[in-house]
Amino acid sequence: QVQLVESGGGLVQAGGSLRLSCAASRRIFSDYVMGWFRQAPGKERDFVAAISWSGGTAYYADSVKGRFTISRDNAKNTAYLQMISLKPEDTAVYYCAAAAKGSWQMAGRNAFDAWGQGTLVTVSS
Image (tube, rainbow, N blue to C red; front, side, top):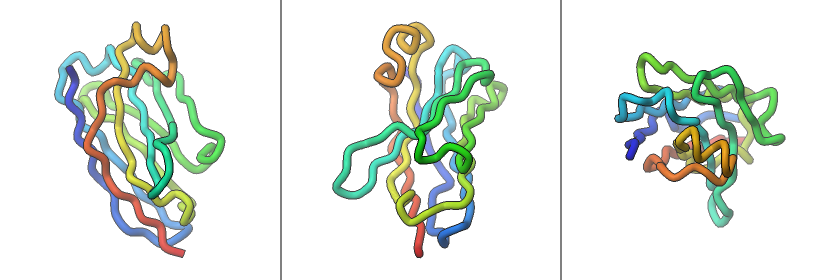
């Protein structure tokens, strides 16, 4: 099972930027689709973005398109989420997630079964 550790969260003013990182423990990192989800207080966890195992294809929630960019460095076993033009409604705990390639092909966004501990992003108005 892949182990995931997020970093990079913090407090930022509206309009600011942050970059989240997700370090994966398993060396066959390139076999996994990587994703980011977020959970705001009192709300369900929502999909934010995902990136294919090669990094060639990215998927985004409508609410973050044009503002967030997901990327990965397979040589470093690390995925990233670059966030710009942050809004107060982006405030949430952000979770990194991984889905095995085969599982993604079967179940898409429901395939993520490995999760990090989360990192808090707070956007002040």
